[in-house]
Length: 189
Image (cartoon, helix red, strand yellow):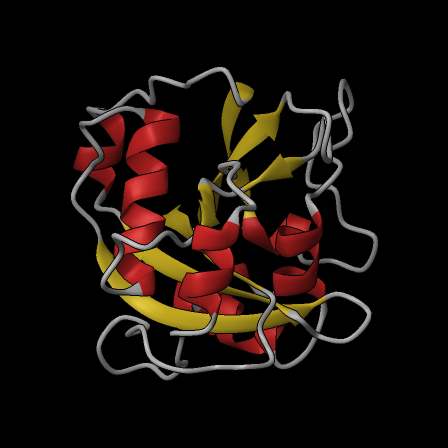
């Protein structure tokens, strides 16, 4: 997730609106102190997660994404911009199948929208993310395993510690229901 907790982020937070029409259009939300978006790519019951290298949530597996800035006209644009920054300019084609606005922080002041994007298997097979310095690895992981209570979805060699946004999206209602429905019913535990 990109850095940039500047006044541009607060300015964008003052312009945010939720809702599923318009890809998270930017409008007014005085409660949000931080506003951001991320992209949860999915294919065949798996989701793409990136392992963070930054001091903030180091070693956790999360989404490409970050804070909105003054140039973004929508939260979907924020998610795409951050995904290109973190995974390279040649993202695979994807269809947005869900928009999941989340709230975090002690006062619910962190507003972060997760866009679930479905990738076709042939596009997934032809694409390799080119990670920037914010991440050290990428993996496609079974969302059904990740979504189990205490689910880390890793193999016996490595447990997967989820970034707080991914943990929230996969383990807390109503976010969990929306994400699992968008990824597909065969993946639900």
